[in-house]
Amino acid sequence: MKIKFLGTAAAEGTPALFCSCDVCERARKLGGKNIRTRSQTLINDDLLIDFPADTYLHVLNYGLDLRKIKTLLITHGHDDHFYPFDLVYRCSPVFAVYPDNAADKKPLELYLTRNSGKIMRPYFKKERVSDDEKAISINYITKFKSFVSNGYKITPMRASHAAELDPVIYIIQKEDKSLLYAHDSGYFPEDTWDYIKNSGIVFDFVSLDCTSTLKDGAYGYHMGLKACCDVKSRLIKEGGANGKTVFFVNHFSHNGGTVYDDLVELAREKGFNVSYDGLQTEF
Image (cartoon, rainbow, N blue to C red; front, side):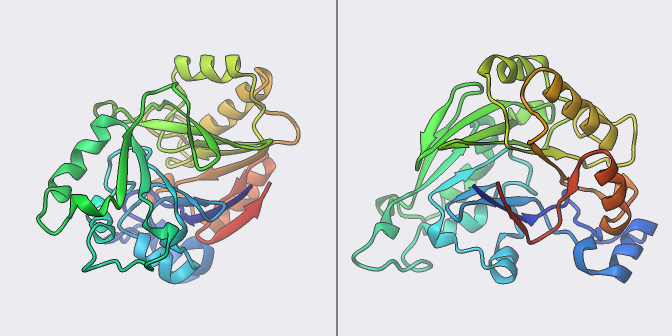
């Protein structure tokens, strides 16, 4: 399974839009892997996780081909993870022309919770969106109820984040590979821990929210590196991970107190890789 981190920042990006803090100034000076756009991840060229306003930038910078995406998973309805206005451009022949012969006409399968889906309704009521195009199939998901899309078995689990949006983290499985993608979330709720333990899944790859990075007390809503270490330890203890599991920290805020260049060695000492925009790996 291939995974490509297209965007690895929290809502404000790094450097943040209007910020002059030490982290943002250092990121501007260093450039490269220290520059982060809003969170988005690509699996195997055909499954996309989240759809921020930076999606078009990811198309330009990292070769993201949205015409190949068959499954779009939304973690929650905050606008750094779900910017539905740009999805409108798939829904009208004025903005998207498809080959006459093709599978490209099949609808994009969009999965999200009903509460997170509320924010897209005003956009999809615009006159220029034609229901006849059937460009997007909207699927409302239920926590802990697995579904299959394009050959992937996907299980949404409860996140510890903005409860009003009914946010989720995802288990993604295909063939003999399994991925735990846990953004945005603080330390997992107990029903999520119970599901992981009872599932018997040993994850090949785990990506954990590390928004608060160097803040030791960050366990709710978002995690810091200390909380990520605790999640890793519990996963290993309860059988959800082992010595072969690849662990990444991802989704960083300038409020976390560090840039990539300073974090990478500290994270490595604790058994974590650090994501950056454009990083691609395979497991």
